[in-house]
Length: 252
Length: 252
DNA sequence: CGCAGCTTTGAAGCCGATCAATCGGCGTGG
DNA sequence: CCACGCCGATTGATCGGCTTCAAAGCTGCG
Image: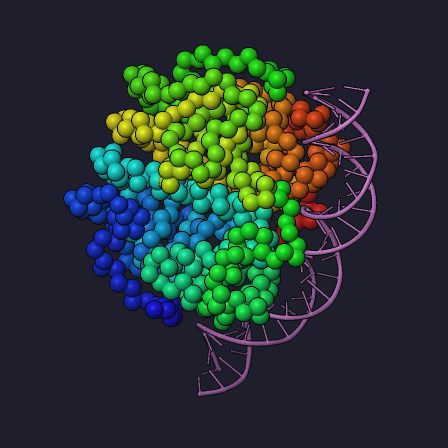
């Protein structure tokens, strides 16, 4: 099913058993009783709305957050009001892992659309993990996975051109939404062109031009925030190795 | 003291008590007996030499590696022989955290100069961490720290220009070496210009030109791999906020 | 001593940023 | 209900930094 009108979708069902990490990110190897224990420490908040902050840079770190529905962006506010978008977080994804080290948030997290977010007090989670080896292992995996994804992003920013970047962004969105049972080819982008550009290290105008070009090339259909992917495999190809043989990047 | 002739420094003392994580990355909060336990699972290898691999992409993940002396680069081999450098690892730093998730190395790690590396079997480490809460916490911090650093790198690649990138690279090297008791202003770079360029998302020629320019501007003195920083604070300034007011970056 | 590889330097071209202006949707208020 | 105004998105034109291409210089090693 396509998720139409996400932007103004206010009636979010918060009542969902096992909204917890158990399903969202730790799908394997937990005994039912352990799942119950994990579930018991999780706080469910009322729906948050566009513009609300989960936390701001500089605040003390207390909890991890799991997106249940909706989407969140993390960003580093820079001097002169500008901001660098560090990531977009879709349902099932975790926010705040980077703050464990200094026990203080280095970035801010802002809700992009009406969203349901679970809060996981880290202190209590840590105690639980110490008692449940498989949970501890899952936590290590989770942190490790984040590092691996960052490496992919490093590669994207370091080596890929604008076309490849946007293609990678779109295929990433596609596959992540798909994992949550949403359509991989028809979705709404809750973030602005400006935010996409910031995330990908591109100017807004470049992002806009590329959307237009992709549409002209029959890769997708775009209407504002609504995206229909018409040729996913072509996008994936483009996101991966050098796309058009026209101008190949040096392998530096 | 400056570390002269690092490149051909073959007589590395491997015999060093507490070379372990205890000193390298987990400086706080461990009881002496726990340090002993941690130390006991660590394997010390004979010195490795330039070009040796710690592991290659695709190999099964078994251990983390800690650089004791020397330096290591991690890189993602791409098709057509090209490689993307993901990071440089100096004494005290850990390698392999990204492989925990899939229990398989996604990147390769190659020794840049004669180095002493400690191997930490992860399975056994994990068991130990489960039994020592403060060790578990340190491990979370370590993983989290890595994520935070990746975010810094994302910002660098996404927003900074060539000049800022090299300045950031140099100040990073400076401060990391300094942490290990080496000179922050006089050091040898064990990696090639090409590898620096790959890491920073720049062409070799650009890196070379910038070294020349920095020297002309009196910021540093360069001779091959030997770097003397003459104006560290200017470099730090340059690496941080927009450097020369001449051409300011859009805050996208 | 001579080659191979890395580094440096020069020149030209291109991609994406920047500047500039219009378009378009959406919320507001009359 | 519609006109207005604001802000994001789009489109066009120009500029510039970095890449690319090319070639010489340097260094270290066999």
